[in-house]
Image (cartoon, rainbow, N blue to C red; front, top):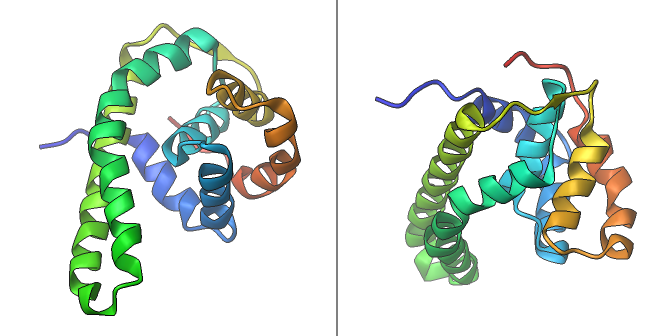
Length: 162
């Protein structure tokens, strides 16, 4: 039985809001941002937690192998099957597996959050969290800065409790 994961619940609700999926996927495809990372930065902001480089390094260590070995190959396969009409049922199955893999990655991220040293409490640090996420991934500022207003506009939402 899996434990309750407020991060996953937040992600499902947030991703369903207008514009979130489009902007997160755009940042993923154009800038190499991990959608789960973007949602994590947003979730932390919603509970007034500011990311740190050390936290992101530890988080990345906790999920990199899973993301690279399971999530990315499933995403690649799903995208390849998208344009093959005869493979629509297989595409749907791979899409369901990809979502399961994303949920497992978020469970890993949630467990890391629970065990990591406490983060600094700052009121709604979404912009700071996203900037740190991009910087820590090696994305150059001039590449991510233009997308920041769009991400902020869709990811800002109602406060959530942890």
